[in-house]
Every structure is written in structure tokens, then in C-alpha cells.
Image 1 (cartoon, rainbow over the protein chains, first blue to last red):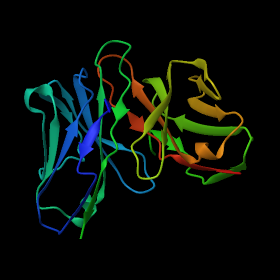
Image 2: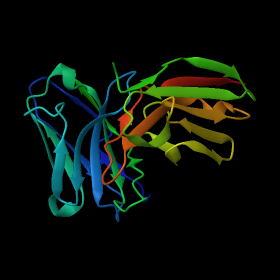
Image 3: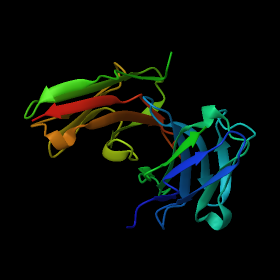
Amino acid sequence: DTGVSQDPRHKITKRGQNVTFRCDPISEHNRLYWYRQTLGQGPEFLTYFQNEAQLEKSRLLSDRFSAERPKGSFSTLEIQRTEQGDSAMYLCASSLGLAGEETQYFGPGTRLLVL
Amino acid sequence: QKEVEQDPGPLSVPEGAIVSLNCTYSNSAFQYFMWYRQYSRKGPELLMYTYSSGNKEDGRFTAQVDKSSKYISLFIRDSQPSDSATYLCAMSRSGGYQKVTFGTGTKLQVIP
């Protein structure tokens, strides 16, 4: 499968614990995005990487959230001291990053439940 | 007021019907318009991608964009039970990287 992959697909954790999610984009894509989606809502933008550089962060991304993309390949999203309000689907997307080729392709998501 | 408004449905139609899904938006800077399909517990899958105003057809799907009215539509002809999913409209500004703003999604059920 050459699409965007995410791991794990599901995560259940207790409030206050730290969690980390991984995203592997399509191999030639240099742009990578994280979104959060809650039940009955569309995905909301969290952050964006151009290669290894994190170029934009949403106000939704509190200090407890950190994202990295070392070497411009895979990306990780860490949530520290999880809260019940963090329960959501976390989606990763990637795009080629060329003019006219900005279509974002999404992974299957990581569903987080904070108890 | 949200930048992108979409009726959440649910919308139930009989198999073979023509389905019309719509979104309105408030930001005139949006230039790229997309429709994604999302099955339950899956990531969104791109269906249609349109730049600026006009129509685009792909098989049973037709996307329309009316920038003067800030209104976009997706039509599905000869709807099938496999079309049952949530349909998300999405849009972004022109130039460079594109932060995509999504609607809330319309849940569609096609009844055999």
C-alpha cells in the first residue's frame, strides 16, 4: 500500500498520560498535515510541515501538543498530559507540494479515547 | 459564523436517485474547492477537486462552483448503496501551501 499510513489506529489512555502517534506520508510528498476530527464535525487543521520545517500551527494546538518531522519523512504527534477533551480522530495528510499538485491525501486516522 | 456551512443531514435516498449536496462559504479568498467522501471510521478520500468557478464531471459525480454566490454543489447520479457515507466539502486559498477548511459533512444513506 503506497498511501498515507498512521499508527496506531486506535489508542485508549487514561487522563494525564502521554501519547504519541506516527504518520508515514506518501513517499514523494514533501508536505504533511495534521488534522483533528471530532464526532459530527469536519477535520480541523492542527499543523503543517514543509519537509522537516513546521511552518504553521493552529491555535487548537496547545502547549501540550508537539509535532515533529525529522528528516522530512515520517511525522509524530505527541500529546502530553492528555485530557478527556483530546478524545478525537487524529488525521494525517500529505501532498506533493508542487504548483497544481496540492491535493491532500489522508491516512486512515488514529482514534484516541481518553478515559 | 463558520467559514464553511454544510447541512449535516442525514439524507436518505432510494437507490438510483440523483443526490444533491451543497455548501456555502463566507471567505471570498477561497479558490480551490474539494469534495471528500468519508466512510465510517476511515480517513477522508478525495472525490473531486475544482479550481475557481465552473463545473467538473467525473463518472457519476459532478461538482459545481458558483463563486459569485459562494455556493458549491456535488451531484451524484444513479446513486448506489456503496455511496452511503459522509460527504465533506472543503476549500482553500490560492497559492502556496493550502490549509484546507472543511464543512461539517453531510451523512448520506442510499437505500437499496
